[in-house]
Length: 546
Image (tube, rainbow, N blue to C red; front, side):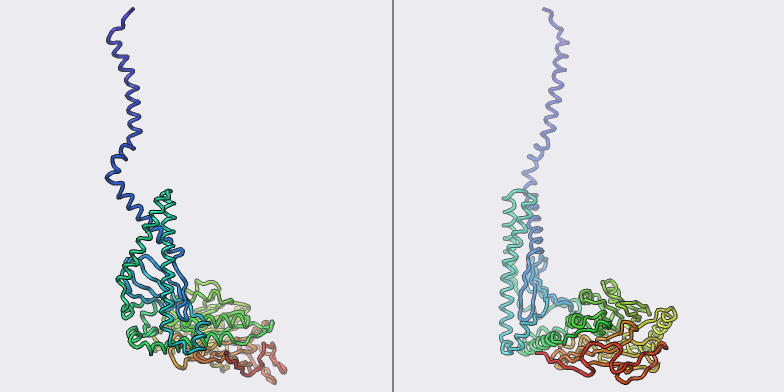
């Protein structure tokens, strides 16, 4: 037997060891991450897992509160929505749209109570009006309502945070035990927050509220907080009067007489000087529905201060049921105008711009002044006359181009008077009382009263200004004014709604042909208007609210 030299044998052994070494190295590389994890987990794993769990709990609880963590609660005659929100400072925030918000340092905890005042409930308000003896117990009723609402909110919030944290924990960890741990931790944190809020509750916070939005510039609208607390009996009577006034307004609106409009007429609702009164939208919507209005015309002062904080007040315009034609008043800013230009179904007119809406051609100009503080500036009258002259020039250009304007719009009557002889009808507002005149060269000027009853301040007075609007009837063929109904609600504290029918002189029985501002003639009717508007007959009609 031949024996291999020792050198060859050693070489073979070395070759055989190479694959084994490579195999061992490959295995060690595959197992290295696991070894590393095992080494690092004792030092960093628990803290990382705890931080991750807390993040899941907080996010899940916040999502749960956001989705279902609110309750709708009747508080006295108002409908409110109560919500809990995560917060670094706590406290209570009361949102009173469109006025702004009231913030109270009521407690210190990582949760804040939000209360949104949604609307006044007409039925509960009417019950207070019909039974004045209930006003003496209004304080206790409101306290009980808030207590019940807070209890319901606490239960719903517990369900919301536990459900949210558990669901998110199950989604992240895919382990039921981890998910249940997340839900339990969320409940513990909420209970701790509630305990902290209870321990730090400050009932005197109502004495030092912080105002934001419009309330910051008009705190008188909500009264002095300290006097409310120290003289609650007086405040209770004032609150009862406000509730009574607003409730009677809703009653008067709902009992306006309904009409069967003549299909041959175009119906225009003229409103003006709403001055931020939210009740006006309900009135306008009611008139649009009952009179089947084709277009709404607003001659300005829709706002009170013209600030961006007020813009949300304008949103209901999109749902009034008719196109909305608007010109700027001296309480409406350029910010207001730009916001309205972005709303659907709204036509903003300025600088003599003309637009055909619902078969009628309108042109208008915004008020050259912006004086929300009701100040009178030097040269104010001259600026109005200049604005009116610019509008008159635009109207003449439209007529020369073969597209004559049917109705011109301006906010102040002094500007509107400058278009005499260039258009059949010009509409204005500003003075908060209704007026009508036929000017020297044949143009009819119609000045509307305040559709907001002079604004939110109306609910403070014992004898508030009436709420006024008009329905204008136009012939569909010649687009001339045939008649108008003046509608007056007897202020916020009265219970009558009066509708007065008026006919232009040329449409009254026995009238003769009269020249028009554009040089054409209007036909003289024989006995009745050329286009018979809906009843009632000329005169006035008063409908008492129940």
